[in-house]
Image 1: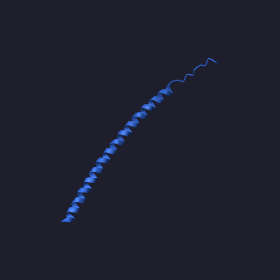
Image 2: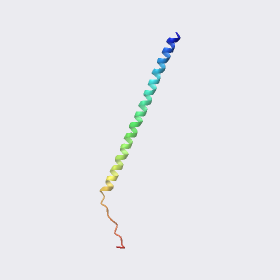
Image 3: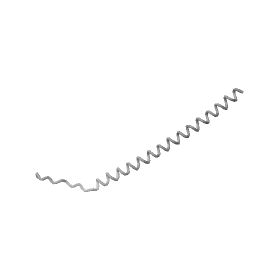
Length: 66
């Protein structure tokens, strides 16, 4: 009787631990995907701004002491 209770307790504990770890894994995976997506958007915006700055012709300021 004690062995069967121990077996069922172990089985229940293992299933509970597995489901909790699955929820944690999914949560971490979602956070990782959101962070990756956010960083991609920010780097794309930064790349667009840098590209825009590079396309503007550089005008040297004319010095009056020349």
